[in-house]
Length: 209
Ligand code: AMP
Image 1 (cartoon, rainbow, N blue to C red):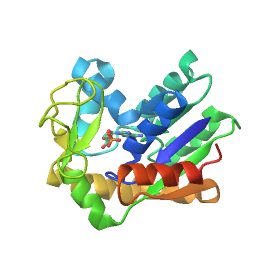
Image 2 (cartoon, rainbow, N blue to C red):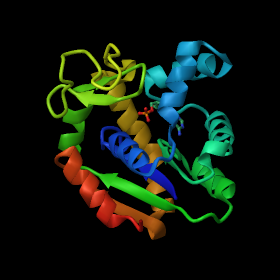
Image 3 (tube, rainbow, N blue to C red):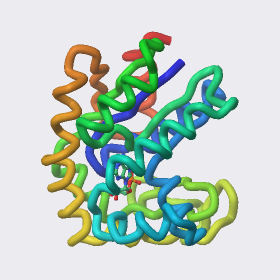
Image 4 (cartoon, rainbow, N blue to C red):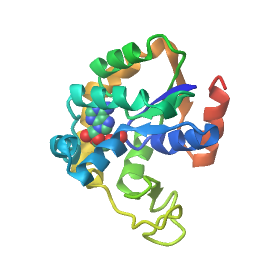
């Protein structure tokens, strides 16, 4: 079971990908989480990635391709995995096809009207410890500012501010929208509007599982 999740920032693809990964006990590989973790650790990759992530721009392809290749070759990916946030450019999409080498996979595209996306992005809260994501209005934590899952202190990502969100949308239009075109013949389109659980049901119905 290999799934690739695509969708604009705030489409809810991360939330849905996590739920699917839990249901099938397969790893959820989120490039954004891996990069933020590297930035927190202050390692080589983190030092290079920080300027791009904080500005809402794409980290250079050779870096993200290398991270992905290394991650999906680990033993925990033997029975499948979900990739979320990769590919975000045509070279990444081509590299991923080469990595998969003909292995069966499904490409999911979570579609949401632009208006909803803007509202979702500005209210997002993230947990730095376990990666859980909340929304101040649509999906608030039980206790304000505290992660339900692990008790971590929730924060607003540096790239979830208005200016950086705008840049992320521009980057999406320029670099990531062509990826949708690349996959058009094998794309499973899922309406991502509305409640999390309703979207998840639509997702399960749309997939071949
Ligand atoms: P995300 O958590 O998926 O919204 O990603 C946050 C940020 O990490 C993006 O705005 C980029 O700066 C960087 N990033 C994540 N995935 C990729 C990727 N596949 N290619 C390049 N940069 C990425």
